[in-house]
Length: 361
Image 1 (cartoon, rainbow, N blue to C red):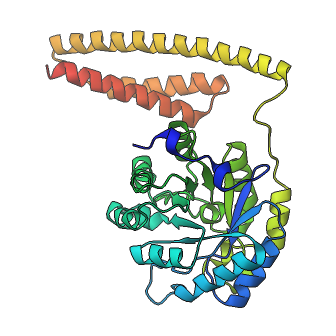
Image 2: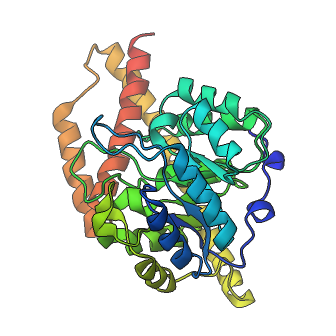
């Protein structure tokens, strides 16, 4: 288990005056000239604190560009020396960790594909035993919060206390405008469980294109994410990997300046009004729970009565009518149909479970 008290505060290893803290750089380090040109331009953007570049690229097809390897780490050494930016690379094997440390890379990150495999994470974690470097852990490809937490726990158990999570979206089977659906509820739950753990959002991998980056970046700020990881390249159209989701440093500067960073707290009168409204919500929630408990008690009585009279649990005709009537009633009150349907299906599923349990006693 991760101890909240042992996770070092972000400000202790990545000081910044205000959000967002930005990690930027090309998807892949391609040439020394490309890396240095990009880094110099990014170093002029105050919010950019970390330069990222992939030197080992996990590609789906073996003939794709798989990175320049070890020589790219030398270019990152030069970035650090000439611009003062911290550097970070993705590591997927113990050998990657060893080489990154050898060349003085400041921060290591573990990618989504690696996080999806606990065996791989454990091997990488073992190579990180006792290091002082911060480690960032991207979410797995699938929306599995426990898998993400498990990867963080493995790194933590290796003695790493400077940690952060990176939300880069999740593979979604249905058609979506995103390369990886953001599924904000997953990182929000991670933040709820680990309030001291810094969380960055990676709009580049969520969007898969440069046109939606600003919207996702703004959403991340509205949800109080600590920072952003956005891919930047001096000539994005010529990039050897993920060209469509990279932007120039000049465009990144405009994107950052266009973000609205909302206050976490308001004036005293605002806070008083907010607390009053929250108290009303607390009362309504208590009433909802009381009503729901009473409804399930009645469901139990119905289950017993059905069992005594040898009647089937599922009454499909009545269920269809309930859905139709409740949706009409709720939407007439201005409520969202998808939300209503989800709530009704959850309640119905629990009712079926209770009655089925009674039938099998």
